[in-house]
Image 1 (cartoon, rainbow, N blue to C red):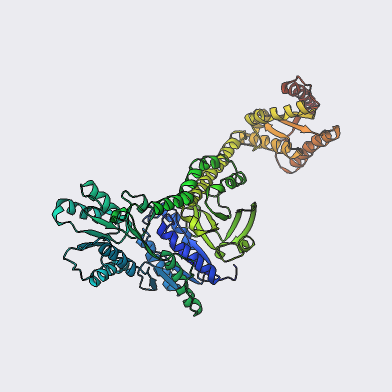
Image 2 (cartoon, one colour):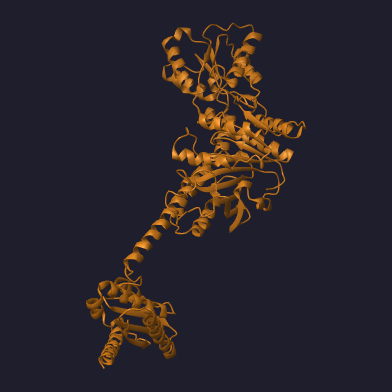
Amino acid sequence: MRKRRTIAVVAADVFNEYMNRIFVGISEQCRALGYDAVTFLMAFNMESGSLIQQGEENIFTLIRKDVIDGVILMAGNNASQNLVEKFEKVFSRWGIPVIAVDYDLDFCESIYAEDVELMAEMTDHLIEKHGCRHIMCLTGPEGSTPAMSRLEGYRLSMERHGLEIHEGDIVYGDFWKIISQRLAKHFIENRDELPDAVVCANDVMARHLCDSVIKGGIKVPEELKIAGYDAAGEAVMQIPSLTTVFPENGRLGARAVCRLHKLITGEDSEPVDTLKRGHLVFAKSCGCGSNVNYALAKREEHSNLIDRFNSYYNKSAMLERLMEEKNLDGLLRKLNGFAYTINGLDAYFLCLCKNWDNVEEEDNEYIREGYAPVMENKFIYTRNRAEFVNREFPSEDILPGFIDEYCSEPSMYFLLPLHFMDRCFGYSVFRFNDVRKAVSSVFARWNRNISISLEFLRVRTKLTSINQRILMSSIRDTLTGIYNRKGYNRLSEGIFKKARDEGKTLFVMVADLDQLKMINDNFGHMEGDNAITVAANALQTSCQLNEVCARIGGDEYAIVGCGDYSDEHISEHMEAVRSYFDRYNSSSGKKYEVGLSLGYFLGVPDKDSELDKYFTIADEMMYRDKVRRKKLREN
């Protein structure tokens, strides 16, 4: 792999603004310090245990301590505690620098957003601008660092304004809707005891509180003012629009990189100054108006980043069109046509395990954990061109060693697994010209379509192979291995039509085994079967120009071919059969000899003729040869 230092970013998904803002900070700080960031993601974020989740979590097996210099672990939004514990066990054993973001882990440093003062400023605003005196705080789980730091900001503001915090004014929630709805029910049932305002530790709780109290008849903001924290897009779309805090998540990501850089090199660094600072966003839920300009800007941003590309994707019929393809090359070439649906896609690399489709193996023999030692980069997309290639690289390198040919500067790469249930196919590598655009979930759905299409292609190829085997077994003679009557009928007609329609020379040979009844009567049917097989072998080995050789009856055979035949070819063909029998009969030790009576047709068929005409000619010649050979034996 390249010599540039590399940070592994371990996360669950990228389907929300919170995660995306942190990724932006990581990306810009890594670029400033000359690091590559390789981000390992899942399309599904569920509890461990299912086959689907097993396939998703397999992406993390790519992380190798001899390839990466440090890890940023974003475990806070991971639904699987088992997976978090696995990270803790593995990374602590490796002994490499690890920084946990917004999550407490015993084995490494943890870093959190600087949100105490921002929460205090929001509480200040409710007090100083709106004259609120009785303010409650709905925070997260007791003991959770983000919940406690935001609570500290609330306390700080109340204390510096000399306001009392009454018993019950601090409510520990779940960063979700349950406690919000429960608190709203209390307010509705006790309207005489309403506080002036509630400041919430995240937007989700604030939105659900707002919706629930309004449904209960409480007016917001006239009777109750509500503020949130996160400045998510949903806060702007909320009715009424939600006053909230735009946090320093971008700087949080940058600070994580700076701290990791210190642990790796011993050097100090400062977050880049291009990232947004935390600030308050005023809206209708506190009485500051609807903030139309901000709302319009957020809606336009949402449209440009997400809605427009969701529309492109939804109208593309991508999955169905990929599933039309009958081979991998066709699938990849069609995949290139869907790159426009991913906002800001700068480069894409499709990396498949060697022998990913496993067609020839037993169906239960496939990669479940880890990746093949050798990966094949099958498709490379950049904004300048698309390449349908097959460049191999070891999976232990994570990224292809040749990736610098396409992305020479420090970059942030997003890796998503390609799998169906627990069957591993490989993984996708995405690079965006601006990580802010990766907030759209289209690229993850896009990746999932590839997984489903690969499985569909694999199954179709497998079924084709099975059907081919069934077909071959149905058109093959079980005793001799050459084609049977069904195979002859199926294949000979095409050969004949080619000769007739293209003016090619047709060769038809008909053969009949000599003395089969005598062999059966005197030496038994096993010896009769042996004679049948020997005759088939003699005919089959004489074929040189891809002729069809078939056993069309108990002791009858036929050969059909189309090509550049000459009388000399046919003489050689007949001589090959006779020589085979001479060698066999002289060495077999049998008390009988095996032989064939032969007849043939050689020539260009008439335009309006059928194959039966030439088969009859060969059959009549064979009959004359059979009579002649019988007389020779009797004499």
